[in-house]
Amino acid sequence: MEQDGMEAFYLSAPGIKLPAARCTNDDQLAKVREHFRGDEREWKAVKRRLQFVFRLCGSNERYYEPDVDYNIADYAVEASRTCLEAAGVDAAELDMLINGSVAREYFEPATAMEISARLGLEQVHAFDVTSACAGLLQGIHIATAFMHMYGGVDRALVCASDLTKGRISYDVQSKADVALRSAGLTIGDGASALVVSRTPMQNGGKILGVLSESLPQHYHLCSAPVGGCFRSLSGDLFKLHKHMPDHVRRLLAQQERTPADVDHWICHQPSDSVVKTIMENLEVDLERAPLCHGVFGNTINSTVPMTLDYTLQHREVKPGDLLLLSSAAAGFMMVSLLLEWGAD
Image: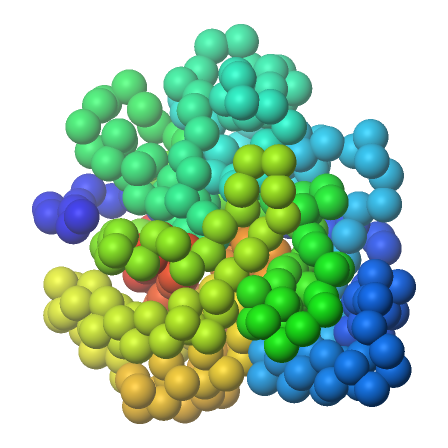
């Protein structure tokens, strides 16, 4: 879906929430070892394969919430409050709240309703968008589309809170299990939020364009079954990232830009190798694309906002710089957004 004739819409810097409990590769291997039922020789083979996956992905640390009573809305509310404060926006000014999480505590009502109520909103257009790891960026796209169509929607908060809560399987007994379950061992917990507005906000940028595209014939490669654990044929799924370079080129072409014009590539971080391959295809210096998988793992919908936050904290982002926010997700879904920083 393309958005032609886009009006001026603005995106805030993100608010994020990470758990305090840190988990390393060795911690994950220890948990797999606890569940392993084979002999020592078989364990060594499984361990080598998992270590290879961690090296390929660039995995190092990820974070998990140890308090089972801490729910998904708790994290989203904390990230949202941080975002609103930094953007200089009062919650009462919000006309819309979109939750782009994969995780949920219940099927009804929409988690966005609980988040809205706990932010003190008495009347707001609130709903959930589920699109695997692209739900939050898809939510931003939907927010701009609503604003384009309806004059009464001036500010929207888009958030995501993905807590694993027992959805990761440590039952890895064979090479086939490594292929199916190792990606889950790189996932971490976290939440994020951003504001979309008709007017500029402090510490934010102007949205120049958004592009969403789906290749649904690949839906079966990755899933989080109801009542089950996350599973992914990551090798096959990662091959689909070959579609990402042309996807972002199409978005840039709509704005009469090229990959060389982008100053900061804020990519989803399922694997360092995936980001490197995409940048090589685009002939972009890898220095423009921070690799954050080793910092906090794959935090699902919050990976892009957390990478943006990392970039704002650790790199010089100047007014007028172009940032390309991009995520690819199970399905196969691709969503990208071009942002001009500090524009007013």
